[in-house]
Length: 271
Ligand SMILES: C[S@@+](CC[C@H](N)C(=O)[O-])C[C@H]1O[C@@H](n2cnc3c(N)ncnc32)[C@H](O)[C@@H]1O
Image (tube, rainbow, N blue to C red; front, side, top):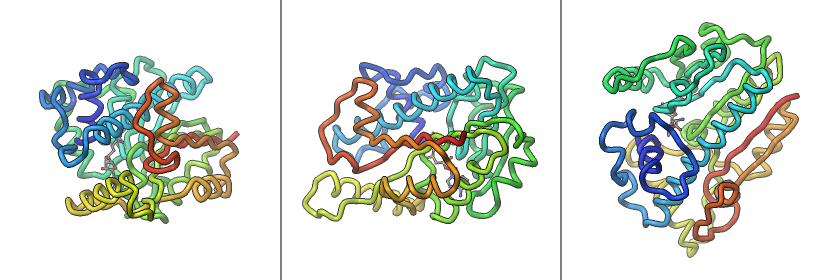
């Protein structure tokens, strides 16, 4: 809900808007047009930067879906979908969408879709999977993903909630797809050990905050670690964007922070 609220509030609060989502406000209900109470403990610059990064990663995902579909990819898998609306905004009946999520979250989303009158398109298949308990291979085979046809995987705002072995298993599965595959995902750079860096102190406060509500961040990677992991699993191309770089791509300048700190967005593909 916190990230969906960020996308919703972005629709009304930010200029320029980097991400346009016709369902962002509807899926969260009327609270979406107000500032996010999940951000109350953050300073305003950090709250804005966080909202913009969440919106920019969805914009990047939307653009990647459009480019992949234009090249002929007809399967899009959204891992840890939460209240993502991509599948409900799709206008191509010949592109199949799969939403993978923890069974509890998926059940909650389906109730929200029904409560807010958002129709489930026939091109969408739900796959309830707990990444820590079962494999993507089994869950997506059952859902009907065709491993002999290319696929795009979107995995936004999830890796930090998983253990490193579960992150590795999912990336190996994507790299091992029978036909070209690509993945867009974000990860967190380790919190700086410089105790007097205000950005590091704020990130540490966030780490403590999510742990306190029972959804701790478990995985952090440096740029080199994640790149070598992806190459060793079989990805051929890896693009890594720090939050600062990604926002600059969309013409957004935020208060400067160390270039590598905070979240990063990856686009990796096999040939
Ligand atoms: C911060 S939300 C991001 C949701 C969505 N991708 C977005 O950007 O709005 C994290 C998502 O990861 C999912 N998740 C966390 N741990 C999981 C697990 N062990 N198995 C499956 N999904 C998990 C949650 O259910 C939730 O949908």
